[in-house]
Length: 323
Image (cartoon, rainbow, N blue to C red; front, top):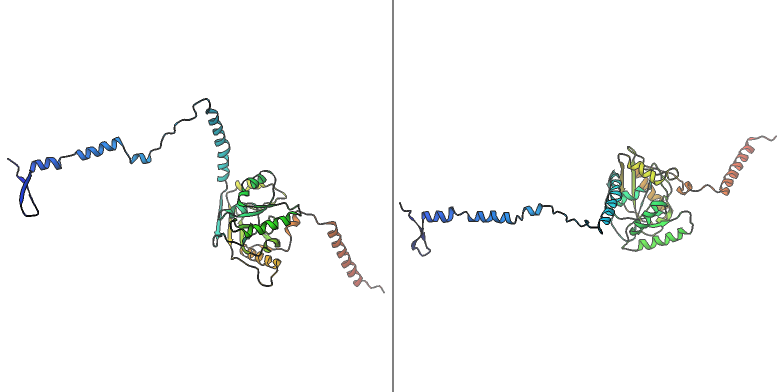
């Protein structure tokens, strides 16, 4: 039985036959050459799997000249870089930031209460601050001169009286430069136990610029973040923090403040200090934090003794009847 031809109708209405039914089936329905061609191309060049294949690293160190260099690299990677990675991973903390993120603007500084040198690390997570910091010896000093120097940080030595004028000039130049990192100042000048706030130094409030207060409050549920520098080195302080479960604290970015008309820099500093104290829930005390580093002078002691003696003599004189 012959298969009937397939009829095609052209656009002009004429009808003609091209192929028989069996020939059409063999050529179209039973033709698997496209499938075979696609499978063969996948075997020869699998472009999809190649996207997720890890390439084998070609060995470069198997010769007498490069093998010592490879051994040195192993020592550096496992003896130095790996411990540093573990050190960084040990900095576990729960930090909650409140308020708008700091932005870089001209004629603007940030001030915060001070509890430990880790205050700078916590605030540095939000923006790259340049900080004013006391010069430290040892590995902390090395870190200051090699890493923090690139941020435009300013160092001072509180035992050198001439450093005050030099630091004041550096502050003014830094604030006036628009390309500098935002300047962070801890106006207390020393670490306080986060329960109180001591007097703010007025130098940060004499720069004729906007002051952005930052309040930091640590939760002592796991560890006390206060660094008592008179009893503990910073290395031991870090070990205590790193071996705790976590450092927990809150950071508030408060509303920027400017010097009011008729307000002195000292009054301005006290107003900002009160804002920080109220927000962080810490108490204000009328003490200079630098007294922690200096013993009262002999003249000051004698003056206090003389004042007390005069008051005592006056009181005794009023109470004694000489008749």
